[in-house]
Amino acid sequence: MSFEIPDDRQYQESHEWAEETDGVVRVGITDFAQDELGDVVFVELPDEGDAVTQDEEFGVIESIKAVSDLYAPVSGEVVAINEALFDAPELVNDDPFGEGWMLEIDADDADELDALLSADEYEDQIA
Image 1 (cartoon, one colour):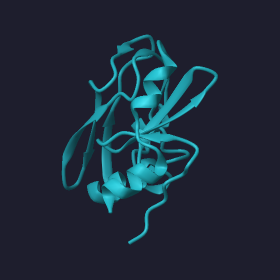
Image 2 (spheres, one colour):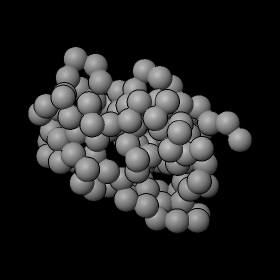
Image 3 (tube, one colour):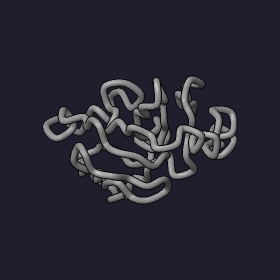
Image 4 (cartoon, helix red, strand yellow):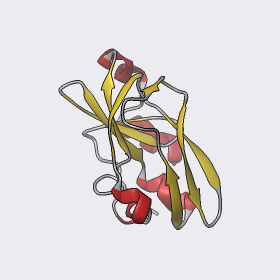
């Protein structure tokens, strides 16, 4: 099976993606991750204004098959959350790289993104 892996963002080994625009990093989970989870039924996210730390848990995603922790790709302050997921968590399955995004972080240090995987490296990991 082939999964969508956009090359305009970076990836974590724990299957989150990060897309940086002007120091703000939008975060979600990958197409592979949503496929492995199955139907997403609940997403728990931090509040706007909360601090997150790179590689530490920022939330939880629950599907009919599993409950998984979500990990921050960078450290910083949460400046936006996708509130649509509270009423429609299935957006994560339907459009993981678009409408299914989870939060935006004002990165303390955008250089932390350098520690993440490229699209090619992530593709190798899930192969």
